[in-house]
Image (cartoon, rainbow, N blue to C red; front, top):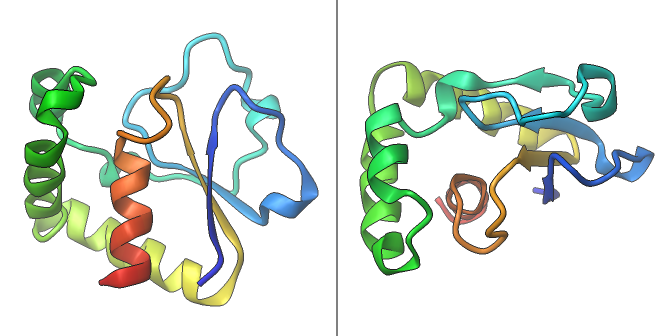
Length: 117
């Protein structure tokens, strides 16, 4: 699988392949055209409760990853994850996210799960 990660505030380009926004909230101040998305998978994002609890606190990162993986294993999030997995099996995909922290965010967890199971 050819999966890349890119912040929503970085310029889209042709080598990105299919660009999928994996956040539940639209990135602040970014026009739809600038993102050049193939799709926005809101349902794959962490729940509002988990997102607020995590608050991008690196000390909570290991537990966030565990809780987010649990969320992805049921309901609408599982359906969205399976859809994303199918897309990644056929195309280069760039997971687009808006978090400032490029190492500790939901897109990192998704990429890891998609590539390693």
